[in-house]
Length: 259
Image (cartoon, one colour):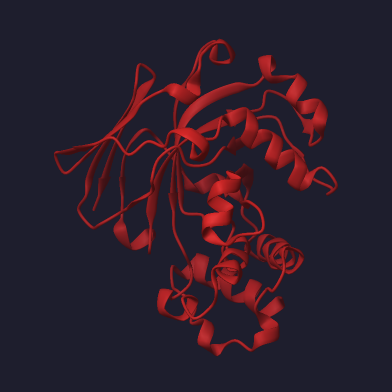
């Protein structure tokens, strides 16, 4: 996985895309283990400070629908975090979607194990936006099946782009955050794209899925780290010059201008 991790690191720094047609079959991850190998090599080569993790495709129903064999995690780079009112250059987020999420913030170091779910009252929860992106030329990525595309996404730090952290949700553990309505105003057109039912994953469940994925690996949450918990909405494909206003019912707002 050295070639893939090298090119991902270069593409991240130079803001370019990778043509996967230039890769041999054995240079493309064919399992979760190989995807994580490429991911870890990528982090070592890019040498960016990380401040937690993100996890997507948490719902089993989404995994089955997409042909995945598990969730899609990645780390969060410190220099990708933005404020709730921000401008983003379209060229910096190629092939991007916007996802409305929740994010845990950890107040101390935690081992990633089942004991974490017994400490929820000591962990803060925030509204958050995950703007996904890609370092791959999409025409070359589409040559692969959905499962391999997922492995490529894991290698590309969970299809990472920009992260926006919003308001802390006070007393969140006593609020049914899974019922909160989310409204998007995109270029003065109102939509309510939020998931309901089996596709709407409670952040507590996202944490449990993350623990199950990583409790046998040598990683931990550090004080101040975040965990983004997966999309609460049908992801929206971002266009140049979009004006995006997002309202979490009674919990806070985001204003995002794409330039």
